[in-house]
Length: 407
Ligand SMILES: [Zn+2]
Image (cartoon, rainbow, N blue to C red; front, side, top):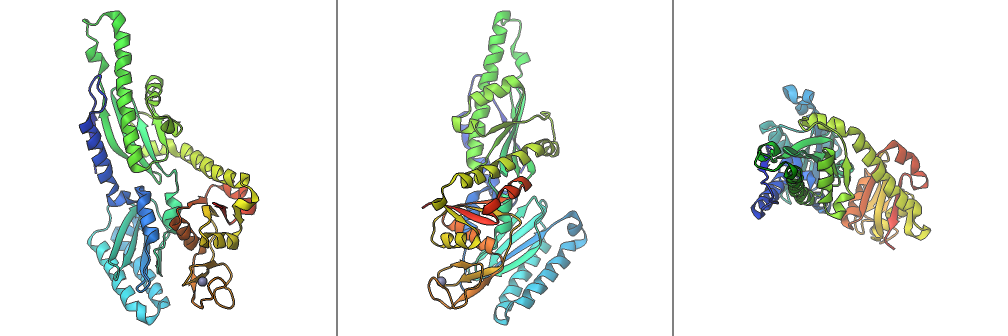
């Protein structure tokens, strides 16, 4: 979708019609395949999917330029499919094969134009067919299980990875969404040409006052737009590049809650999305470190009874629905066991059936972290992956996985 151009009038804030239009186009944007992940609601929806009979098949396929050329993706997908079918039991393999064929056919028909990875969640019996394109490269993988495999999405979707970027000036302003490091323009705003308005008929001593008023009106409309877009896209930060007078007037018109999420940076008003991405690099890194650090601080300051420390204790508290926040070293991965009945997770296989409900139906889980993250999302707990080397080193006794408890 191309960016939409909006013109602002003098002495006039956003009209109700303009507000509606901004709301509508922002929502439409979230439904585009490349942006589906912009909505945390989509991710929560995925985490809730479960199929007891036919498995849900999750396919992650990296689409680098080399893979795109000469259908390089095809051989990768077919060798992944081959491995998957070797591992699956005979009864299930026919449906799995049919669905993998369908995915291959869909990609053959139309490879996503943008994006460096494509992800599918498919279950024939439940009629689930989901395709997501991502601007970052994720490791190739096919996962077959009763629930979709969402860990790669969770870790790249982390809070703060979706920001609104505003390049503001009196004559033109531009709004961008920064998502997973990719920057895309969504609105261009034409402002007022102050030169044309300040004719000789305006007394000299009035000119400054008029110019200031025009700037203020414009800043107010821009602030209103930013509020609408941020609410719709559930963006974390508002990253602003503007001359000092515009910056001050803009921030003055933001709600108090939003002011706290503003970060300033510098870039030319005509910069390309790529240049903006480069200019934002250090700020993005700092925001991530600060965000992860803030989560860790909550853990460090919590009293002993409000903490589950270590893997098994955390898994136990997840089952009991007591977890408010889950923290995981992003490098940690381990297989485990899950009770098919009560969903309890175990790092070490309990010898004699499930110790919680006595069921004998224990199943292998190839990634405990994914299963834990899914349980956390189910109970509306926050999930924080520590990805910055500094916060990973600071985890200490909370490594590799711990939880902050509600009670
Ligand atoms: Zn059990």
